[in-house]
Amino acid sequence: QVQLVESGGGLVQAGGSLRLSCAASGSIFAINAMGWYRQAPGKQRELVSTITSTGSTNYADSVKGRFTISRDNAKNTVFLQMNSLKPEDTAVYYCDYYDVSYHCWGQGTQVTVSS
Image (cartoon, rainbow, N blue to C red; front, side, top):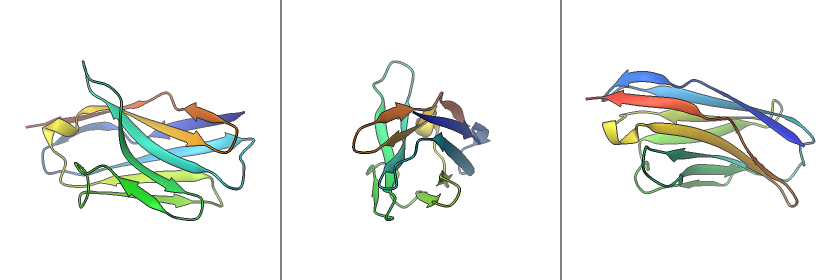
């Protein structure tokens, strides 16, 4: 199994920045992908960004140019740098991990952007 621990959420004004971190531990497969999803009240969980263990990245159109995902493979940690935050970015952000045979979610971290 893999355990994920997220940190870095909080309250920020529109135009501000936050950096989320997600540390994975446990039975981590060398070839994997980690990423961030978010869920706003009353809405479905949606993809924000993903990154593979080889560094390939993917972003939702709504965050392109504002968010940057990165990872430290030695520490099994993924980061999400969020700049130019908007009120519509307010949501619970969930880290996820998946490999060829396993998938799990973190507990979520709240991001609130005030106007």
